[in-house]
Length: 256
Ligand SMILES: Cc1cc2nc3c(=O)[nH]c(=O)nc-3n(C[C@H](O)[C@H](O)[C@H](O)COP(=O)(O)O)c2cc1C
Image (cartoon, rainbow, N blue to C red):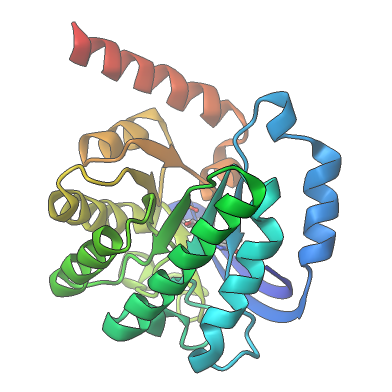
C-alpha cells in the first residue's frame, strides 16, 4: 500500500505484460478514501485489499509495515491479501523463507485476532506467493500457513523468469512478468501447493488466465476461486462472463 511510480512493458504477441513498481510514500489514506466512496462491499461486492511493505523499509522491519497496513484496512476489507511476492520490491521475497515467514505470519495472526475482537468481525487473510518457488519452499510455505491458521493462499504473483518471452523485444527488462507466459509456472506451483495443503486451506488461483478454459484448469489444479489481471488488458470485461460461464459448466458436469 504505497504510491508507486511504474515502468511497464507489453508483449502483445504472447499476451503478457511486465511491470516494475517503485514504492515511495504511503498512500493508505487515499486508498481508504477511494474504497469508502465506492461502497463496493455495501453493494454486495467482495473487496480484497492487498498489503505490502514500503520499498524504503528494511526487510528486518517489514512486519511493522504489514501490521500498520492490516490495522488501517481491516474494517474496510472483505479479506486482506498479504503480498510477500512482488518481485519489484527489493528483497521482499525473502519473507517467503523459514523464520522470516514464521515470524511474519505469527505477528499477523495475533493482530488479526486482536482486530477481530476490536471490530466485532473476523476478516480473513490470504498469503500471496510467487511462482518462482521450488518444491521444498512450497511445502514449507504450506506448513507455515497451516501452523498459523491462515485463511487462504493466493497463487501466484508475477514471475522473474523470461523463458517464455525469450528473444522478444523488452524481454531483458527487469520486473515481474504476468499474463499468458506465467500460466504454466503459476498453475504448476498452485497444483503442488494444493497437494501439500490437502484441502485444509482454500487456494485462489491467479496467473495467466486469458480465457474460460484457463480458469477451469486452475480449478482442476485445486483452486477454489480465481482472479485475473492481465486478462483484462487483453480481453476486457467480457472475460468475466466467459470465465463465469465456463466454470458454471465445469461445476454442473462435476455434480451431474
Ligand atoms: C501492472 C501490475 C500491477 C500489479 N500489482 C500488484 C500488487 O500491487 N500486489 C500484488 O500482490 N500483485 C500485483 N500484481 C500481480 C497480479 O495481481 C497477478 O498476481 C499477476 O499479474 C498474475 O496474474 P495475471 O497473469 O492475471 O496478470 C500486479 C500485476 C501487474 C501486471
